Amino acid sequence: MELGTVERMRRHPVKGLLGEDVAHADLSTRGLEGDRRLALLDSETGKVASPKNPRLWRSLLTLSAATDGGRARITLPNGKTVHTDDPDIDEVLSLAVGRRVTLTGTPPEGATLDRAVPEEVLASGVTAEVGIEQGRLGGGAPGTFFDYAPVHLLATSTLDAVGAAGPSGAPADAIRYRPNLVIRTAGEGYVENGWLGREVALGDEVVLRVTLPTPRCAIPTLEHGTLPRDTSALKVPAAHNRVEPLPGMGPRPCVGAYAEVVRPGRVHVGDQMRLL
Image (cartoon, rainbow, N blue to C red; front, side):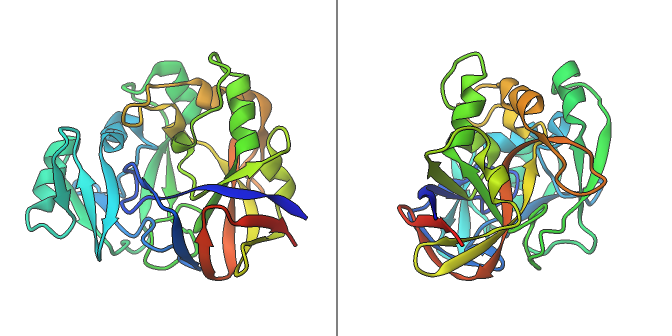
């Protein structure tokens, strides 16, 4: 059964920064080649820097990263570019984000990050001190910085549904939700919920197992480069698609779905996605 086609493919070489569009990429059990292989560590706490705690780290979304050979190229807010193997990269990035950080490709043992309670961010704003939940990175892909899983799927039907219930009526921008694969779908609403627990094929090679709905934090509401702040990116799914991602978590606003790789291979924009 055909579910749709790969309309867009994105990867984020540095966790927490804006990413890049790609036309094709190898997909393995460690996710898309080059995706979330690097991260910034807070030099004070040792935790992974993430805009999930926007009071400290929303500035990460003013930087973007793209692959450049065997390294990544980072574009700073002033348009200047630096490379992840530059000798002064830590100093440059610390100045850019306003907090002392270290760039690393090696996740610390028991790596954690702070996740601000999304509802409190909505109520109090991005600069307020709000409740913090500690999250442990455990994406099932050693040597990477995934939260839950190495692949994140997002349907255009979901983007349409979020946008239709928001103030503009226009489809939500996929960049806010940081997916790997945006699937052009013909259904209505949050169609990824119907893929949970199933295997899907991408093109002629890749097989994924869709594992759980993607719980949303405050990140989609934040400014992303030139995209303005938009609280409806979280308020709408909170009102219309509250799902329990894992037993014991309780219902959470969800947009998209996580997946693991059953059979690796190369994925291209335009590949069909089929339910197996």
